[in-house]
Length: 500
Image (cartoon, rainbow, N blue to C red; front, side, top):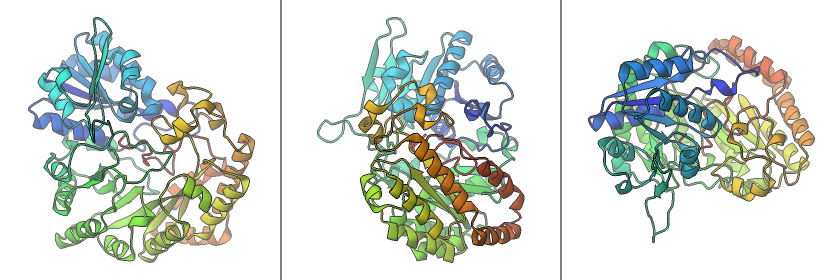
C-alpha cells in the first residue's frame, strides 16, 4: 500500500509572536515518522514522508504529494498543540482524495482516540506504539482484529476502540515492545528526508548540522504528575549497546553530523549507558551528541559523565523542576534536591555544558517555594536555565486533578503562546504573582556578573557568542507563557507529552 506520512508544521503556533522564524531555521527531521516509515517499508509498503516544517506552502505541498504519489494511506502524527492543524490537514486530504485511508497517531490521539475520530476526517487511530499496528492496518487486516486501534465507520459514524488488555484485564499504557523487539526494529527511515533542508540549526546548543534525533530506549519509570506516558508507557525497555551504536553509525553514514538522544530516560540502566559509550570509543567514532530532553538525576554517576564526555557527549539537561523539597515530593518526581546538585556538579566536572529545566506554579506552590526555585537555580553551576509555567496537559495526572479548574478544553488554546491564565485557575497562586516570579527568575539567573563572565569566556571559546546573544535578547524582552515542553529557543525538544 502506498503510504504518505505527514508531519504538521509547528510554525502555526509561532505566527504573530516574537519567536516566529523561517521554517528551515531550527528544524530536525521528525523521528516519529522515520520510525513508522521504516516499519511500513519493512512490511513491504511504499512510503514517502512529507514534513510540512520545511514546506513553503503547507496546502500546496499536501496537494502536490497526493497528486504525484496517489497514496492509499495517509498517516498524521500530532500532539495537543497541533490537534486542530492535524484536523485541518485531514479535511484537506479528504477533499483531495476521498477514498484514502487517513490514520492518526501520537500522544494526543492515544489519549483521546474517540474524540479525534468524531471531530475529524480520520478513519483510524493507532493507540500507543504504532510500529506493529500501522503495518497491520496497511496490510488490510480487519480493524477489529488489531489491538490498540480505534476506527470509525465512515458511513454510520460509529466508533470502535480495541485496546490491548494487560495485567488482569486492566488496560494500561505499558508499551508492548520488549527490549528484544526494539533491537529487531529497522533503523529509522531517515533516508526518506532530504537532509539539505535541515542544514540550519541553533549554534547555541548544537555543534554540527544536520542533527539526527535518536531513541535508544522507550518508557519511563517515573510518575511525574505533569507528564503523560500515553505512547511509550511506564515500562522501560532499552536497545542493546551494540544495536544503539550500529544505529548511530547508520545515521552518520546518512550524513548526520550530530546526534541528539531524545529518550525519556536514557540512563535508567547506568551500565547500559556506559557500555554504549565504551562501544563508541571501541569503534573509534568521533561525533558530537547531546541529551537535551533531560537525564534523570537519580540515574547518573561521575563514571558515566567521564566516559560519555570522552565518547562525544557535549551537552546534557536535567529536569530539576523546583528548589522546594515539599513541592518536589508532591509532583512525584522521585528525586531529591541533593542528588540534583550532585548531578549538575558531576557533569560540569566532566567538561559538559549543562542546562537546568525548572517549573513554577506547580501543585502546592507558594511565593516562598518559587523563591526557593530561583535560589536553587542560581546556586548551581548551570550554563543555561529555563523556567516554565506549569500547564495541565491532557493525558497527565495533573490534568485530571485540576480538571475542575480548567477554563477551556478547546485544544486550540493549548498552544505554545497562550498565557496560562487563559487556560486554568491555579489553586494557590494569582497569575500576576506567577508572572512576577518568572521575570525575576530570568533576570536574576542571567544578570549575575560572575555568570556573565564565565559564560562569555565559554561561548567565545566555542564560537557561540552570537547565537547566545540572540537568545539573551529574547529573554530580556521577557518570557512568553507556554505549556511545559513547548517550543522556544531554550527548550524546543523536551517531550513532556511522551512519545510525541
